Image (cartoon, rainbow over all chains, first blue to last red; front, side, top):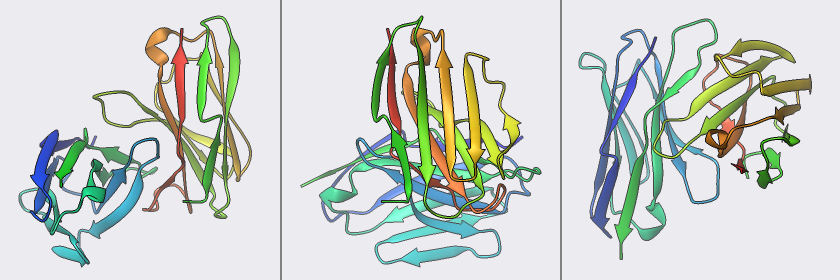
Amino acid sequence: GENVEQHPSTLSVQEGDSAVIKCTYSDSASNYFPWYKQELGKGPQLIIDIRSNVGEKKDQRIAVTLNKTAKHFSLHITETQPEDSAVYFCAAKETSNTGKLIFGQGTTLQVKP
Amino acid sequence: ETGVTQTPRHLVMGMTNKKSLKCEQHLGHNAMYWYKQSAKKPLELMFVYNFKEQTENNSVPSRFSPECPNSSHLFLHLHTLQPEDSALYLCASSQVPGTDTQYFGPGTRLTVL
């Protein structure tokens, strides 16, 4: 089955700097890769996703890139703000009948004012 | 708000107690999920329901018993739990299983004494 590795586990940046979180996956047939943000006391919220037929997707300060050959995808946050501080999870959709999501271990992002 | 609500938000129970967690989605979705989120671990899928039928049990111990009376409601019945079952239990829903976007509730923080 699918296996997802996420790095780094913690990331600290200064406000205004960029942050990059990377994930690798094992199943070359996986075709959907969402990113979730989880704030303290809340459930994970989808912030951006990408499908295997594109290499990059952008939404304001957030972008995701996908390298299918290398089987890795990354989340890029530019001009970070203190409210970006949260735990971020990547996931890959299994290519089984249920198509369940396999999540990475999570990255705790701290943006220092 | 994602349209997925969970009650209670916090629960403390002894190992001999019986309790239930409730999830309700207001999105018109047909698939519902239970996840377990423990510290330092990826989200673990527990159960999947599709149109009220259980389609996946991810080797979950029988002390966790799910119930899905209709497509909008999902319960997790708990009995004779162990301290290691203490975790955040998250409910999610999607249009149908295997479709891409899952929407999460805020979770129930469970502590087993």
